[in-house]
Image: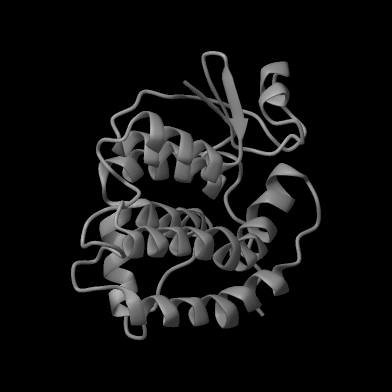
Length: 222
């Protein structure tokens, strides 16, 4: 099985961690942002990552890939079967993919992608404002819903946790940190999820990649 993209993308990371938690062996082939093999563009006609191939079957979009992996490899079960729990897992994936990802790219994009990948001029004020004002509001919500078990659904690891932790993993590579005084439950939750072997190796590699490309860009001190 091949996943096309880069684990610096939360969507690619989500698929890679999901597969790892199922014990599946996948190969990451770098692609995206206008680059990639003909096989990548055949699997992703609009050039978006991640794309995926398993033999003759190819598809793009992280949610579609995960739906395929869950159906083909149902154990261990990472998308709950009970209707209420399944709905909540899908909600948290949507929260991560859309709401968290309205804020995360403002930070990660301006501190790393624009200056280090695209060689463009970042807007660091947008990044700093998003980290200072927008991100804490999302943590306020998570702080109110993370259970004592530190798993979002069914008191066990599910797609919900993988999806929500993936955007945060990107932000840790560009210097973001959680205020443990304001969001102690969030801090403990993300530490636990990102410490899992499925996440830890990928996140360590992503930190090394960012550092090798010059590290995040930050505003000069006044």
